[in-house]
Amino acid sequence: MAAQSKVRRIGVLTGGGDCPGLNAVIRGVTKPAQDYGMTVYGIIDGFEGLVEGRAIELKNEDVSGILARGGTILGSSNKADPWHYPVEKDGQIVITDKSKEVVRNYNAWNLDALIAIGGDGTMHICNKLQQLGVNVIGVPKTIDNDLDATDLTFGHDSAVFVVSEALDRLHTTASSHHRVIVVEVMGRYAGWIALNGGLAGGADIILIPEFPFSWEKIYDKILKRQLMGKKFSLVCVAEGAKPIDGEMVIKSSDLKRHDPNQLGGIAEVVARKIEENTGRETRVTVLGHLQRGGSPTPFDRILSTKFGAFAIELAAQKKFGRMVALKGSEVKNVKIEDAISKRKLVKPDTQAVFAARAVGISFGV
Image (cartoon, rainbow, N blue to C red; front, side, top):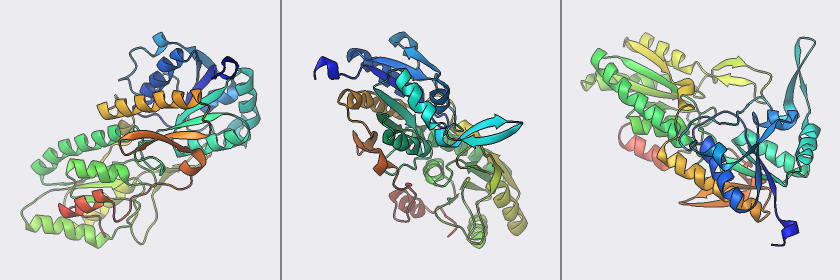
């Protein structure tokens, strides 16, 4: 590659919510970039920093020792979509279009490319930025695992580990007190965390958004377990789960976010209905942000490092408008527009669903 055509200056940001593995990607980007003679600029607080013009140069010493650290050293924001940017005016929040500021700062920093680490929302923003002339490479991050173009997103394995460990602990107390314990997990509109976490943690019932559930089927499963001498049950419910005749439970609404609905509260509803209709003492545990915090699992550390290093390889080759993706055991790349074409949801023929049913787990259907 001719010297004058080389990519010299790279921006990297972590968009959306935090999750284990973000720092490992930053490290995976920064270290090999030095070998290519690239300068890396870490953009502070995700797209918020890109709009407001806040960035720092990252060198090897800045990313030394961060492989196992949770969160992101650059900061993040899930309320900073440049096309849906919240600005306070006269005491009220006004949604404005700040995309021009993004392009202005990208050019002012003389960036040759932007590596954006994030989930579905971040990839939609990347697709729009590409159309404005920003050279973008996406790295898929979400504990929800709902990006269809990659077999797995980093952060998911760490979240599943938290769920399975919680279920292991709750199993002992549920058994001791002969209770039903309902555990609410994240995932938004996809049930992958509940499915994989529930399968790993030995849940008796798993409720996910893709399979609207029957109250009677839940009661029946709990009562049948009681007849078999099993005086406790574990219910793993995704925050987006809903009954056949009902809607998702919305905890609150935040207009600063592109999707204002904050899900949460379904576990309380499920627990109350179980106690009222089975007579079984029931308790609720909401794992919440525990699933997004803490150190990444070894699997996520490896996947994140692979993603970061491969993103730099794509940048060096000027393969823009692409997202790195896990296909089988290899890291490949796909068009960003293809990556966001549809959400990856749990299907009835998913092998994990088959396995769960085979071992007696009920989905309330």
